[in-house]
Length: 221
Image 1 (cartoon, helix red, strand yellow):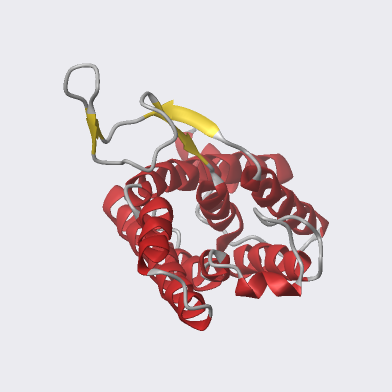
Image 2: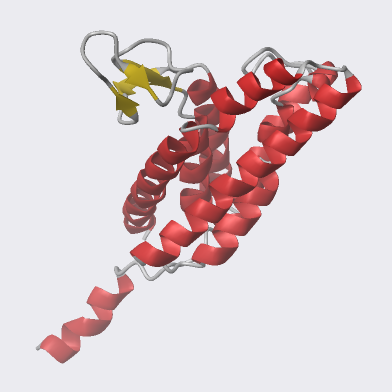
């Protein structure tokens, strides 16, 4: 009995099959494209885990946070990593590339607008770094969703974004003779303790994407 139904059971089992280029794939790419846009303009108030308070005044390691209780997190990186987990490398890169091209073409989908002039913005390097980060993360995962492998992929992917973002910021700052204090403030706000939040939420995003991918695969069978 078990031997007879095993092939039928296996036919409905998700085994890490790659996403095929179909109408459904196009829909998913567009969905991830829109998800990244929406996440750009979303602020999530979360508990500040990296504060050390003393008495009522309080001492804060993360002194760039908005208030004493919450950290307002923009979930753009988790949206990018969700796209990686859902679409894999090829189509994840497609969704990210479409986002960047659309923003540079003039659509106001970046945090501070859009247009070709955005390449001179201090934070554009972080957006541009989504491309190598997607390649690195998806290549490491390769349908291996073991915790340590995903952790390694996410850490390297997130660090790639922040390293490239900081280097790009320093390059633009050099061109515009930006003061050292302003550069330090930008780096602290964009790549300070925020890196740890990015790693944490991107881990969740990868596993949520894997779950969604399984459901979609079952529906399409």
